[in-house]
Image (tube, rainbow, N blue to C red; front, side, top):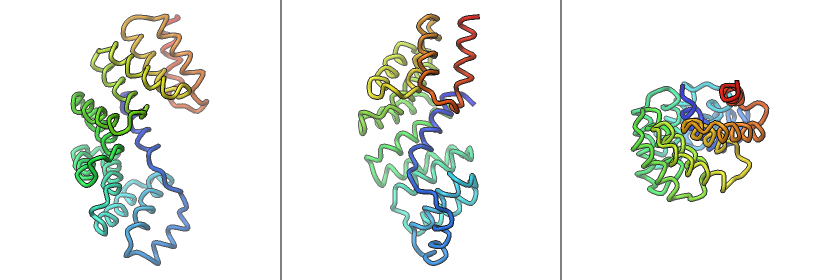
Length: 222
């Protein structure tokens, strides 16, 4: 799976902000199964904490049936469909969230990642650009646009986007990863190596892309 997709999905997962108390919400669900919120909470807990995507989807679908006009439910369901590889269904859910709430920035951000996964770069750029219009300081949108441009071979545009992300949040490593990729794509090895090292300096020890960055540095400095 390409780096660009993994980074996008990581963004999606970080954008779900729910506490993970399985026992508490299991009890609430038993007592209030007719209410939307317990099903929504349980769906997110099953996905994030338990890794049980199928059961998470069942709970989220019940929540949607109970409150079909809640945009966040369609956004969450879109995430689940995307993780299942059902990209067409994911697009439908993100678009439904946007129809209900036209300024739903996160849904545009997530929609962009699906188009990116499908290789529909212009549609991805359109969605990410709308996400930035709604939230001008969203570093994830800038970085995702940068990765799209790198994948298209438009490295100067990629560098511009990643530099914007870095200017907003200096200590977030993803922008430096993107800069390293873009400069390497342009054949500027010295600049690329410097950004790879900056990424490694900022990335936490458990970051899944540290080894990939080290591989690039070894390639640039055999």
